[in-house]
Length: 161
Image 1: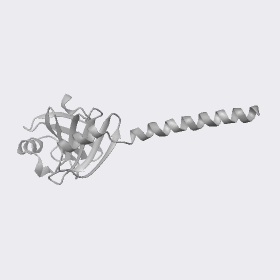
Image 2: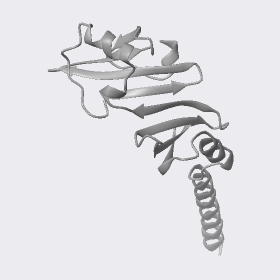
Image 3: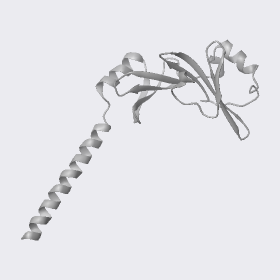
């Protein structure tokens, strides 16, 4: 009888704890309405939208009005942090293209998806991800063509560079 009682208590505790685990995991899989509303307020015409929670961010992958792939980052408080938009070389501002073409990296290669427009509350930046054989570098430009940063890897927050 004592064995049966002990088994019942252990079984109950196990089931209870497993239930808590599933409930807490389930909450992480839900997009808060406030975050979703903030995204659609900023990008009402977004197409092919998907999202994921990464660290403390909600990342929305979508296609914007210009048919460019984009990733928009929002905080858990539904605050827009920044958006990375894949653009072509031709979509770069003329000043950025000119500055790059006069730079020491002008002969380096880039692939589709290696040029991004980064929109943030502080302003817009342009990121070029380049290769030269086994070497890699990322260049971060202001819209006027000023090189803000060159590094192997440039991460958010971009404006602090």
